[in-house]
Length: 234
Image (cartoon, rainbow, N blue to C red):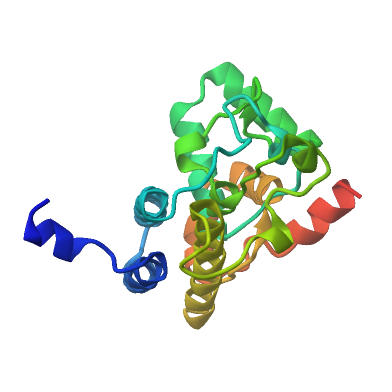
């Protein structure tokens, strides 16, 4: 390893997370402040998720973790009400419009209108927008499928913060803290920060193609999303 590469390595997991958090904060603040179109919001959301993926990869090298129970085809955590920041609901619907077949999008439409007991973007046991899935979905992890089925998607009291924590738990903490930073930035710009239930917000976006632009202008596009979703899924 060259001296340059050694010097560029993060001193610790926490130091790396602090640096990337500051980077994400600055980029989101500047990007959202100047965003004028839905395309601007989508680019900002994708860049942010890309940064999160880079953090996840770095943490796996700095703080290895034993094998997770999470596997392709396991959709246990997808059978929950997912709360997201509005920008990720906007990205989810845009990704569906861009990549879904006509038949697949019609199924999505039916789910959003009639309601479903699972994430509307779940198809054949897998996330149909996986590369653009919200931050909260990236933070879920488990070492025990049985606990997942009980609704425990992380190790709770067995996890801890600090440089000695394992990568999956550190990433969950990073994503949770970043979500709060995003909300704070949105509120400072006079925007509705949510969180909103994904399927309820997706329905608003389905029925109002200009909803993303209206949200960016400060309109409360999703005011009933949380209440409506709770009413439809008691």
